[in-house]
Length: 253
Image (cartoon, rainbow, N blue to C red; front, top):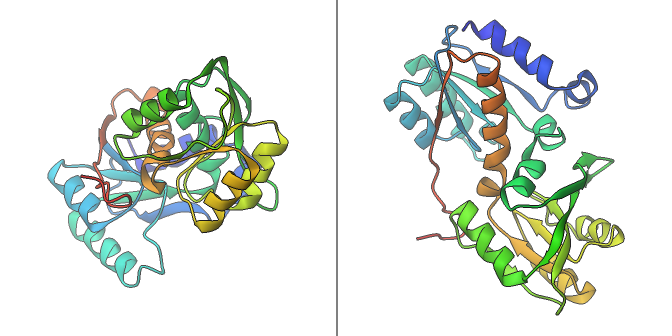
């Protein structure tokens, strides 16, 4: 498939308003390879991901994050290797967080939330998605399920004695106390995210809301996978490969 068709598919999958709102939060970092047969996907762009893509003969890498400018020198080195290995790269951040099949929704689906009440959106700040279980869950059962799906040491704080019914989810950097307060105002008894600070933990305890924290990378990978699957559904000739990343954020294994 020609890379121009990939661009057309992105425009087809994402609402125009969302792409316009986040016009500088997605795009092609490199278009060395115009003919796409194999797509590799991961949350982050890194040297390790690019080297794996080279080994797997990937033509296009799709990620949630571009290489961060403040990880000094990384973006330049990634771009250099992408060009040298003839691998194209597309990243999509904001639009993937706030689309109905995006990062938050995909995580809610993975942990078995039955009813998605509202999707994550952006209103001057990120707003958590809200979901509900048909039947209340034991907190420990939910923790174990999330650990299994993310395959990592999810951190958990049980801050009340009730079972889990209504959950707020904001993948990645959802550590602001504003995010938790929004979930509480929506009647949530549990909040799930991908980062936590002192203030996150303190406020969750003070407010009496359960807190589950995975890693930034692995709370968001399912959204990238959802996008890759949708691209393949529109062109069955494409092969998909998940590019594995290390669980280094939580000192896993």
